[in-house]
Length: 523
Ligand code: SF4
Image 1: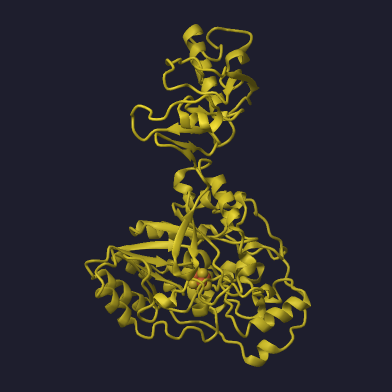
Image 2 (image 1 turned 90 degrees about the horizontal axis):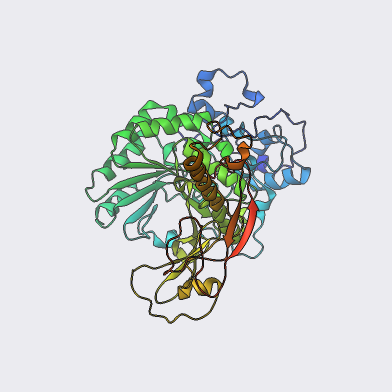
């Protein structure tokens, strides 16, 4: 694939850019569940499908200058001036396909924020943001290769991307004009290094985007690496399925990837609107070609820093059979400070994912450590307390349980106590929050079973009762026991959710529950 960059001249980059009338358009379908419907900005409405679906046409017609952008999106004169200045430093490329995902009426659109330069890129108030925040270059024995973890190596094989993400960690290589000329200077040295290190089992070929390489060059990397017996996995890190899926409409490329048995694909979807029929189509062809497809997402302020967006994204990925793998905290790279959230935001999102949706859709949230410390996983705290005998764990509902790793007599003397301490002591085994929906369902199931046993039916169609709600499945008023638990020595009592034998009497809390279980809560 030829690098289709159309460089700006210096004078063009520096001239003030006057405002011009903007090409406006309606934008609908915002709330569609991904993969939604295909989108095309009216500017390209008359482009024949065979051209629209050709990655070469998309690449040649990519938006690569502020002069093009100002005709398509609204900017203040100050913004235009600032991003015109930045253009001399950083590359810009947005294929018509990806541009069509932008809502042009929203200056804070999440697709726009990822792809269109912002004046905020010029800021680095404290100097905390760095060119190489992960110190990859310091772990680089060969230009373009980073060897950090014991059994993995990263190969940066090109500085070209189909879209230049404004938050890119590796922008020193990809976006900076005339950037990292070391890349691809000596491809054979990278292969030789991997060959000489049998401890390397997993090679990540990453960005720049390796799927922008000419197919013959990609073949060189894949076939040489696959021929090494100690290599089990070759990961292709790519945003092409997100920003230019047409590249993977090319059967020669898919056949190459498929022919190398060790290839895994690592995609990079950040927002549910990026999951389109086109991206779903290329994921299908990759999976059909035998490649597992995993995704990493970067947590980005104004793009996906909400639980609602992240749930929609993870569910959309599962729908197209992409496994959510990582949420990366945004790295402190120069010019990306405005994308960075607090770490608490990441934990807040993880708290709202785990337990609330399928475990298949739960990525690992990681901070890539400064000073080259590598990925450090973070999650909400599920370990509440501990003793010699047991740990106290909590689940996503806030229920706390005593958990003994081994079935052995207690070694600690029990003391009159309550709450979490009582779980540690072993005088209680669980604490259940009030109004727990799962417990309500259990109670409803139990009432249904009792009704069936007593009347031979659960909805009175058999018994003819005039009060069907009296034992309909979810319309129940039932006692709940809160803040009490069954002791280890208590006899089993199947009719009670839990009970206390000891000094503290159970506190019964009557609750009413909805006539149907909340959406998505039934296992
Ligand atoms: S595709 Fe990847 S390497 Fe390229 S600019 Fe985006 S994040 Fe950076």
